[in-house]
Image 1 (cartoon, rainbow, N blue to C red):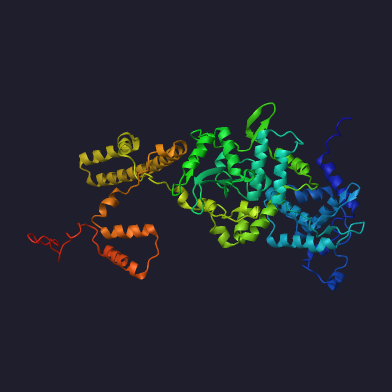
Image 2 (cartoon, rainbow, N blue to C red):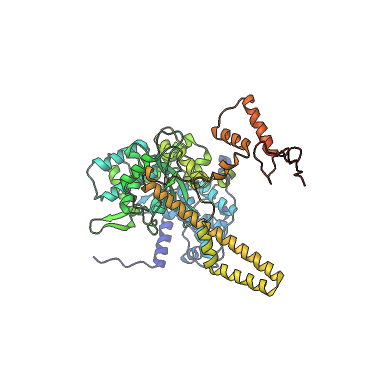
Amino acid sequence: MGKKPKKTLEEEAWEAHEAAAAQGYTRGAHEEADKRPVAKRPAKKTLRGQEGMLQGLTAATEDELRALLVGKGVKAPPVETIKDFTRYYAKLKANRGNIVEQMTVDSLRTSMEWFFAGFYRHTGYDYSKDDRSETYRHVKYGLTNELLLNGEPLVVDVHIVKYNLGAKDADRILRTLWTHDDLVFTAERHRLNFHARLLTHCETGARVAALDDIQWKDIEFVLHFPEESARARWIYKLSQRKVKNNRDPKHNSFGTPHKDDPRLIYNTAAIYLAMAVADGVLLGDPSIEQLFEFKRDFQRGDDATPLHYKPGMETLPVYRACTMARGLEPRAMSQSMFCNIYRHNMRNAGYNYGASIHAIRRAVGAAVDERYTETIRCQLLTQADRNVFGRDYTARVVRADTGAAFRSEPAETSHFEHFVSVDQFRRTGMPVELPAAAKYRLQTEDSGMLQHRKQVKEYLVSGQHTEFQAALQRLRKYRDRLFKEELETYRETWTRQRDIEALLTPRHLRAAPTPRTEMAAFMRHFIPERERIAQEMVSKAFLSDEELKPFMADLVSLCWREQNMVYAPTLEPVDGKCPVDSCRRDLTS
């Protein structure tokens, strides 16, 4: 049998009219009733008085329907026409072959939200908030009182029963993934992809599409040593770009912090690191042995050290596709493949309920709601909050240990504190100025610098004093800006090189960072009170009043100390004169 010819728009529209008419729709039958606002919760007496307001339905003509939905600059139908259109649409959807199935209030309101958005996009006319609210009230309190021909309500105000997929369920699925026969071919890379991605859904509450195109640049690995921990640990921030209402995913992302776990089944950090090593995306090409050696050497107090990616490799997908014919591919594993593995493993684990990824999202929301504030919960699940604090004062990384919350375990704070703090930008020994060689190169080779210096020299030789001063000022501004930009580049390069050195070089072979403390050590001979105060500041000891007293005196002394001249102890001026008896020269003049 050949394919049926494709129906024209006119044929599809006419069939739609007939389907609605089969349920009793009549265009304009409720025009007068639709002009009146619908009471939010009308009493029975009011309902009796409005009897007949929402009765009898007929189909709209093809021209009227097309004028309602299509066309630039079309005249916007009044709200009563829109209300009647909701009735038409509900009748249309209720007639599905031999099955009569009512729309729910939520589904019809969602459809009308789409209609308003599409109407604005096609015509440029935006219905007012009052018109939209009246339409939604009409759906909830008007159409629910109308009947289909079989006596059932036209629209029902019911909600589909929803279930959560919790930690125990996720455990069963993951154990099934590794211990049961596959119901569908699963490449081993896909197995790792699925394991890591499912856990990431459990720890972030991400929508199913949010993790489709995660790239390595969206995962920031850091090795740090928490104060409350007895060991160093890997932490990472995963940035979602395909979040709802994110109009600029290239520049805006939403980050969630994660940490490693001693249990392999929950250790997403280990899985992601293994995939990163396998893909060869890490700068320096560290091996697994080097990563472990680096972690063993890491000590309390060391600077938190991030891993870096090779230029050009950071855009490689994390969940890479793999086929039997072509092996590992540079494209991402599709969402359909992930969902297929998910469905088959749910079934393989003995479930007779096809829970969606949104079931995990609901479970995460419930778990987080028990431990964190509404602001945190809304930030995690919707990346937005209607409260001023949630909108304007929360960091771009959610402050929640969602993995621990999901598994009902004690929460930790160190891993997300790192990602919301500027401490992540600190390195011991960070250079604060350009090397002399770099400055000399810029002053002698930079074309802009040479041009400015040439102008300064010309005005100086010609005796044009005003022009000379202006040119000299431009030269200084250009030089300062050039040095600043070059210093930023130099610091970034230095940081990257230092992190790679720390990663690949055993501790006993590394060059110890040289903090800038030479001048402070020298000045302690001239300002001993500053040295005493500094030592106590570092110790963070609890002081009694008697212990605090001498330090208060030192603070006062520092406030009084002159800043334009320093003297060695016992050599300060006495009454403004040299303390040497044989001199006694007046030092105030």
